[in-house]
Amino acid sequence: MSSFALDTTRRSGSTVASRSDGPFFLVLCGSLVVQSLFVFIYHLSGSPAFYAISNSVAIALIGYALVGGLRWERDGSASMTFLVVSVAATLLSVIYNAANTSMTDVLKYLSLYIFYAAGRCNRTPFRSVELYCLYALAALPIAFMAVGTSKIWNWEGKPFGYLPNANIAVLHFSALLFAAAPVFGNRVILLQLLNAALMNKIGAIVATVIAICMWVAGLRPRESIISLAAILIPVLTLGVVAFQFGAFDRAIIALNGLAFALNIDPRSVVSMSYQKLVLLTGSTDLSGFFRLIHWANIWDIYSSGGVGTWIFGYGPGETPALTYAGLVPHNDYLRILVEYGPVNLVIFVCFLTYVRAALTSGAARVLFVVLCIYFFSENLLDSFTSMTLFFAYAGRMTAGGRVGESPRTLSRNLSQ
Image (cartoon, rainbow, N blue to C red; front, side, top):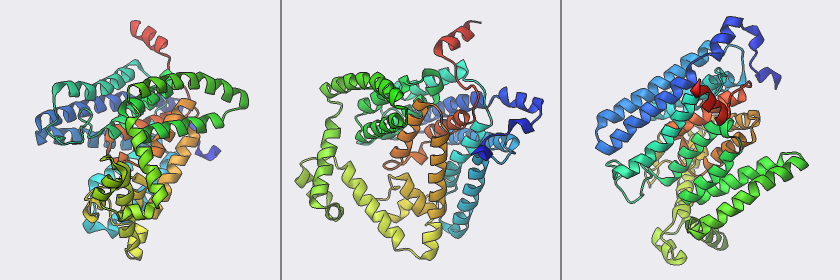
């Protein structure tokens, strides 16, 4: 693993100084706030001009991160290796599926590797302005809800602010908590549980609980007991309060539906109509069943393709045109397999595994595992702000060095 570490001794003192004083994260956070403001205005007004501006800001930020990463990442570290092999594998898929390729989807996918590499090249301590930007990014979707209904998401899905649905809202706040983990430590774990409970999302709740258990299981026995006790009491208190306010009602319905599917054989559920499922389950909340049916449809499409399709996929962004539902898979692992091919899927899984192993903070590991689990049930690759925060800050956290300051230290620095 030593070959994966950044070899700072090979650089001159001026180079290291430039890196340590680099403005990357200030530019990153400021750009995300500006981009989100334009998204806010776009959803409020419905004007495509603001959508185009927000996309331009996002593209410029990706370009800035790529230039910065290529400028400093010259030591053969794992981040650059992952970037190079992912670009090569994606390029082969694009060439094979030249007529069926969305370059927007390609850019969103590759930006994960780009932001991670750029984050590793910038080991600057967490600055006060970054924290304010995270606060702003948290406040924007909430503020939007007070303004009125989005002219873009005017549908029965009841979006959270200008975010398309509560699942993406959970991810949005999870990413903010992950980025703030160096400052707030283990408190972000409790905030993540509150985030999942308030959004009433069983997937997020289960993912968070699994992530916490994985973290505690990896500690020394004494540390496990102390950490578990420190988290378990607030978690149980939070759970009881949330249950009393009905935060888990939808989760209970979902679990009952899952038990029903297991009892009658999931394969038969896939062939049922939604009307029949409503009659059998007594509930119109069929999101879990929808995913089973949608995944089965996508797998049938992929497995029925030719050898070339098995190797290179159908092309980035192509799944909505293939499925009867006209939607992306609601599973990013399946999405990468079907659109980019198995080689890209292996690279992606290895990349996530490497990042998770390289994180040293328990809180950061918990939030990152939540992301990895959530990839199984949502379309997270489309969430630019969340993915940018997760992978850029993961890069910084895995690079080593001092990356965080306590809130008290931040306050003292502001007063100076």
